[in-house]
Image (cartoon, rainbow, N blue to C red; front, side):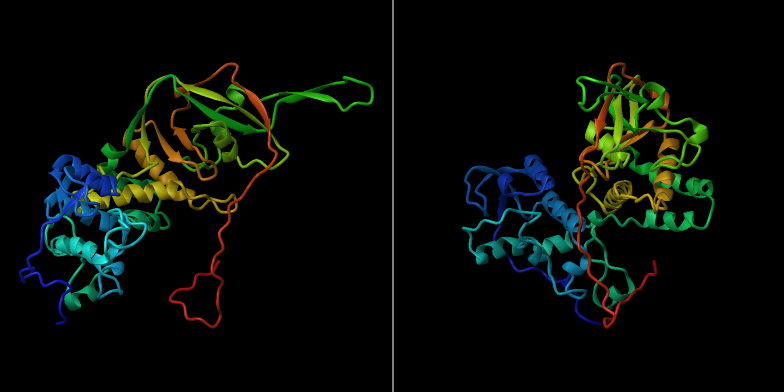
Length: 401
């Protein structure tokens, strides 16, 4: 059997104790640990004296470091048997997710600080695993992926199941698997909060002649009230959260996002206005998963990964030509509704704001006098170049489109 990365039965060489201050911590999670566990001392990184510091051998510090490794990095990036990296190298990356890199400090001194806790990172705080297996056993297990990559196996399996079985059968199977995330995504939107909604087109326009031969001076009447609200059930088409024939009310945090969500073309007129919540709403807020809330065990990190995956699915743009991705978001929305939520808040895929979908449209009323007509002048796109297929190269997988 090949040697493990770290000999868990050996005794580490004695090292000096090192301390890290609040200001030298990059991750909010580490700053949180310093606030709770820190004592006045001299920081080993920046040299600040009498600063709140935490010992690099502190249990909470080590646990937080392991959580951050799991969150940011795949195992192949630091497990030398799987790739060409190491745990200590993670601390020298720039930008660094753990600690600030002090350009005034020598590489030797910094390495001494990092090495003072690398052994403990691997062998202590067993609540979190960062090494799948040692020796030849590593080839019998799939390496761990970064939590931030949003690759929850739960949704992977659910997506597969939705292609094979009726959605209501799949929902019944997965509702208990999603129930544990409820406390971490629950938010309350207060009655009286105003949100924006848009609809393509207008009711009518009128024109006046101001001077002989001059262009007509137009005035526009926007859609408002029920005409801009949730569509009637009989004409409700599939949306990101609703299946066909189900009428939900989609709103946005700002006017620009509301207009962008309906995908208008340049030159089109758009009616916009406000809706006001008539009661407090218990919503599933999936805009941002929070490592400071879920990090103390492998189980909590798996919940965080699930939330990150749900967030990623809702914030992935679906072109009009391919709405198959809505199968999963509709599935998730229905489970969240069954779990007692009144709606979902999620980041917009086309605007800078965020969206609110309300399961019961009567929970928001039209705001009189809020209607406007806007003229879309320009639509911008952000593009990213992708690698081109090389017919001479070897690829592990090929997918036909």
